[in-house]
Length: 415
Image (cartoon, rainbow, N blue to C red; front, side, top):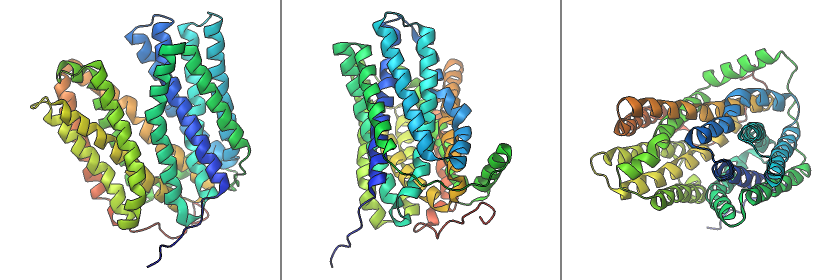
């Protein structure tokens, strides 16, 4: 039987996909270069680097929904280009301050916060643009390529940044990240993204209507809740893993880094495998693989409390990388298919809030449990959290989805 040839993805989407790779690469390099600059250039300690991480993630909580409103009322292209320009400007300012020997921790903190504003805009705008650049039948394929690019950036970005900082200094890593952001902005300038016409209503009314739509939709509601619970559990482990691995599992700094590399490898393999999986199993089944993988991984991590074997951590982190990619590809495609175009930006922003907003909650929970009961209890509680997210998704309507639903209504009222 001849293999059915599918039409190529549109050139505008290809430009957006390459821009996404460049911007993810720049983000990962900056996330590594900033704390290294704080330590190597400014002599900062652990409290300062923790505060820097807060500055780089806080905009996701504060500005995701406002960006969704802006995208629905104007144009994803304006947000994408403007945010890339903002990110490039903050990176260039960091380079200039280092070269002039004028960088202070306060300046690094402020520039990290402002640059993260651009990252939020890009994170909301790219998935909001995809349904306008590819046909409905190619949504899964498009999201597979986006996730593959993100996975590659998660592996190569930190490695490249670390190597550049050690060989040529933090300012050189920021220069490379600036070039990547500028190239992404140049690609996006050449993309024509159609604007979804959204009726002009009060901003608060728009937010309420999008929240109501998500919570009332049998597919979107479990996506939001499962993503939130998953990330609480994931960052509960992340917040204590380095100390746990060294003190309890007898690992070294090098082997801890290798575990992080295995996590990235899981992401890449998941992105590649998703293409074959999507042709052999239903979309709902593929979405469930992510929570299942997370639960098994958390169980393996919990087993290290009684059997402190580093090999279990390697397998766990591989599954932590593999599962979320399969989840992201399948659920992002479903979200884009069932959401009316006039509110695609707001719905995407709610997903960003549920995902990134849960991370400081998980990290804070880890700090409280570790201080009060010990690191082992963080691992045990995380296993319970991952069990909860699996129950949530298995009892929802997601596993029963066979393929992308029929055309989404044009308006939220019709939905």
